[in-house]
Each structure stands twice: as structure tokens, then as C-alpha cells.
Length: 321
Ligand SMILES: C[S@@+](CC[C@H](N)C(=O)[O-])C[C@H]1O[C@@H](n2cnc3c(N)ncnc32)[C@H](O)[C@@H]1O
Image 1 (spheres, rainbow, N blue to C red):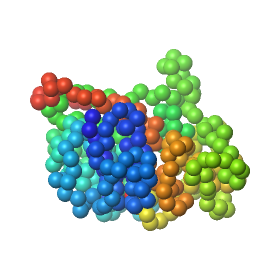
Image 2: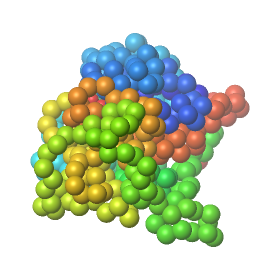
Image 3: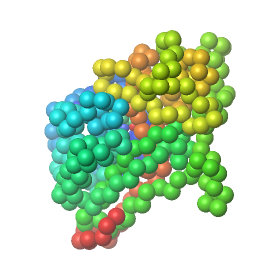
Image 4: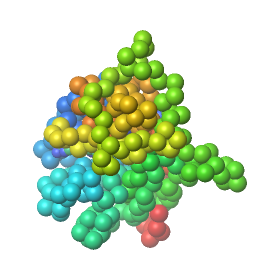
């Protein structure tokens, strides 16, 4: 189906949709390096600019709208989170495109912290806004580790189906679990030690892309990004601020001697080895930390139909998705 992508970043979410056979026809982000990365790896259909300055007329009609709207105002990683943060308002841009373009489906991704902001009131408001826009809406917290990503990364996935579309969207079934589940045919979570086991040291002879790292001395003070990484578990969540300002959390390599290289962090997010990140190390780390892991994105993209028949549209239905 034809997809429009907002807040596309380097394109983690979009890559999953492409691999699942969808066609991204228009994308947008205002982070220049991320847009360069997107153009190099995904396609030239991305526009660099502030979405609030782009009118809906400039956005083509499409079947599915996708977007991980910026979450810093919402995140528990940000101790100053509050509902006055201007970036919280960016979901209104996604809502505006939904109302103006009326795609059949939408998918919005966000941090788990959004659920508890203002005791849940912010999230209730967002869901109510999407419902009032004429969509049947549901949401669920998914863990990327359950889909073969070597990282415990929990994100809220909101799904919407336009009220007149007779098609049910179901969340993807996990393929992996903390313990091997033979009965349900699930593999064991992939550990970060396994995921990085064949990656040579950045200083050795290699031909890996982006295999460079920032040489800050490691700290082990228990704070996010300053903890030992257990090679026998999936990595902790890779995070980043959504814009080009401020710090990035770069995980320790599971040898706990140095930080991960850009390539290793990209592997932790399940980006393919030939996906090249533009910009300096901290920009690349940030683009990676912002991304939806392509493997999770692929699982999500696969729940959407490739096409929809005429008799599945134009029906008034009160069914829940
Ligand atoms: C959480 S990231 C999304 C990452 C993306 N979904 C992926 O999988 O790679 C949010 C993105 O929103 C972008 N952004 C923030 N404010 C924006 C604005 N006003 N207009 C356009 N993009 C914006 C940021 O640059 C960032 O890349």
C-alpha cells in the first residue's frame, strides 16, 4: 500500500515497511543528517523541513500514515517531562494530516512513558483525538526483543483503522521470548553478546561501515548509559534526544571496556550492515537511538494488507479493531 511517513528520522520504521512490500511515497523530517541518511539508504522521496510549516496539500494521498512523533516531552528518560513541552504538540501535526488526508490506516509509535504522563490524561486525550478524527483505535506496548531485536526496547504502538474500512488489524505475534517456548514455537531472546560476537574491534582491519566510536571513559554509576552491559541478555534500551541538541545515550560494549561503535549500536537496533549513517559519531548515534528497530517495524508493517478490495471500503462499521 502507499505509505506517508512523518518524523521519519534515518528511516528505521520505513525500512520495515519497504521490506514488507509497501511503497513509501512521501516522508519528512527536519534533522538534516537523518534526512541525508534516509536519502542514501531508503529513497529520495523525503523532504527536509519542519512539518508544522508543510501544508497538507503538499502531502500526497495515501493508504497508511506512519510516524513516531517526537517523544522527549513524554519520555521518562527526560526528568523535566511535562505537558507544556512544545514538542508534545507535534502529535497534532500527525492528527492534522490524518484529518486532512483520511488514509485508511495509521500507525503511531511512542515511548512507554507517554502512557503515564499527567496520570495518563495526555494519552487519553491523544487516543480521543484520533477516535474523534474517525478512526477505530487501539494500542499496545511491544518489546523489540520479542521480535528478534537484541535489545529490550518497549514502545507503545497505536493502530488506527478508518471507521468505514472493514478490515481488522491484529498486533504481530512475538517470534521470540525470554525463555525458549517450544510449545508456541518461540525462539529465545537474542543476547547482545550473540549479536556482536562476529564484529571485529574497531581498531582491527575490517570493512564495516560506521565502525567508529566515541572514546569517553566508561562510567559505572548506575545511570542510563553508565551501566555495565550484560552480554548474556538483550541490551538495554538505546535512546537519544529527538533533535540535534543535547546528549545521546551510547551503551557500553558488552566487553564493558569501551562504548559501542556506531555500527554496533545500529546492530543493537537491528539495522542491516550495509545501512550507512551520515554525519559525525554523535549525530549517527542519535539517529540510531531515535529509530524504530527495522525488525520490529517489519513485523508491524506485515499486519497491513498489501491492498484492500472495494467491498472492504465504504462500509459503515462499529466493529473494534
Ligand atoms: C523518534 S524520531 C523518529 C524516528 C523514525 N521513526 C525511525 O524509525 O528512524 C522523531 C523524529 O522527529 C523529528 N522531528 C522533530 N521535530 C520535527 C518537526 N517539527 N518537523 C519534522 N520532523 C521533526 C526528529 O528530527 C526525529 O528524527
